[in-house]
Amino acid sequence: MSYEVVSYAEIPIPIVKRLLEEEIRRREKVSNLLQSVYEHVKKLSYCSEGAAERLMEELTSMGFKRITAAMIINIRPRVLDELRTLLVFESRVPDEDVLNRVLELLDEYCPLTGK
Image 1 (spheres, one colour):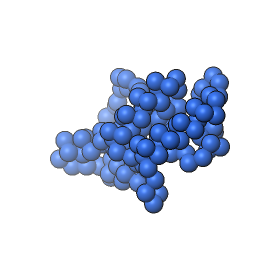
Image 2 (spheres, helix red, strand yellow):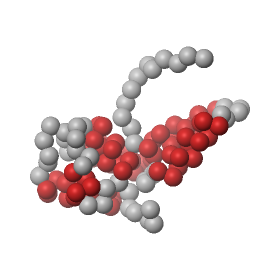
Image 3 (cartoon, helix red, strand yellow):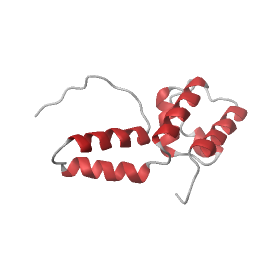
Image 4 (cartoon, helix red, strand yellow):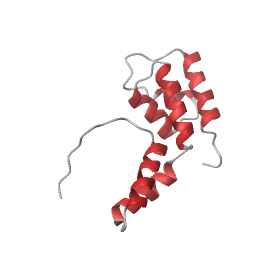
């Protein structure tokens, strides 16, 4: 069976989780690969789908590229140094105030609970 990529978008893991759940519900039989990917995504999801969507909107409205916003949500940095390493796709590093605001938004939308 061959596949064709018809569109591409950078999306955070919580949204991938929802898409996989929808696909699993549609199928009568779930492949081992699909089940493995889903289990992996469940473990790596730091926030809810809704929170990830809202945070994605906030980060892109602050001027971050979608790929950067998705990486920030997926990796869930805790300190400025961790956050700075995720800015490789940005043309410039934002001011420290902006980066601190990103960390505050992460705490608001994706609070760490034992992860």
